Image (tube, rainbow, N blue to C red; front, side, top):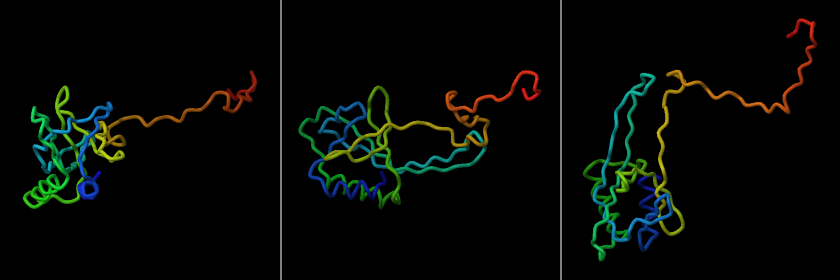
Length: 154
């Protein structure tokens, strides 16, 4: 989800909730401790120079049980970050403390946001020696061998 899509979703809501991939929810008294723009410049394994930018939200839960972040307050925090950091309509990544700092994508799910798992992938499969997947053929559908012994075709 991009930042503008997220803001538009926030404008429709009275409360904010985040569900983790395992089905549990981030406690409703969470804080958004950071809104930032993260840019990575790197070279992939095939030697191509690349750049990637995302908006990063860091969610944090403390023992502040009376705290509830409302959509209009989060929008104002995002607007401050947009102005100060020149953030455009970039994809969003969300950090939340699990076993380690876990990073998620974000999607809408009913009346809350769903934190979606992210995965790594090779960006240069065609350039770094990763074999392409071979076509799988069902043996029952394969053409029958018409060669006969001694014919010289096998």
